Image (cartoon, rainbow, N blue to C red):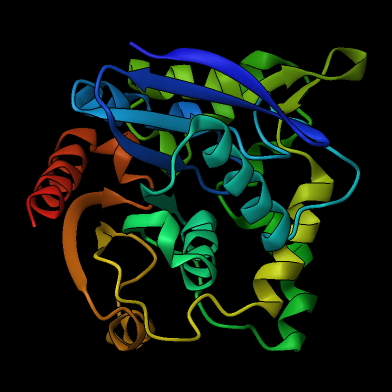
Length: 280
């Protein structure tokens, strides 16, 4: 049901998926090392009622991969230009994991862009202690969403490895499609992720230095909390409940990638929130 398009935004190109049966604007932002196709189930479910855009953010998927420029400020500038290109003054904006922190920072800076804010199992929202940086090389090796950067000797080995990861539990046709699009051939016949190392490194640095929530936000906000996700303690939820003054928290089955492993209840939860927000 979607169409893939490309737009030139000043110095980069953004590739994005578009569902345009409805008119209500909905912007879907993927997490680190993912791409817009992770939202294909959600887009198909909501496409009749919403104008949906799911970009591959810079450094990801089929979008540009400059040598530098992977700070929150760069991504917010890209998305602001994308919305202007689309003719959107505001939209319902969803972010997953790292991009949920990105969306929270954007909402703090430009609340007029948000009809609502949807945060899907956000990554650590506060600043990180500077000493945490010494753990980055370990995290690059153990985090599931970075393990697929490769390189792998061939595609078959990469797929075998992917089937063991949390985001691909069950290996459904949706998951297989998402995986295939994430990978590309490398030099010497090897395979690896389209996500680039320079983006990984700059993003981790910025996540450490920037707090996602720094002042009260009145935007209607949904926090989707997967049962086996990252945010399992009250301590982790405290910043959201402190700063987000119009907050709902909804638990859904599945893990950090609930939209891939349990898409039906995830999609329904989001649909109900959006419908109530539009009615209010």
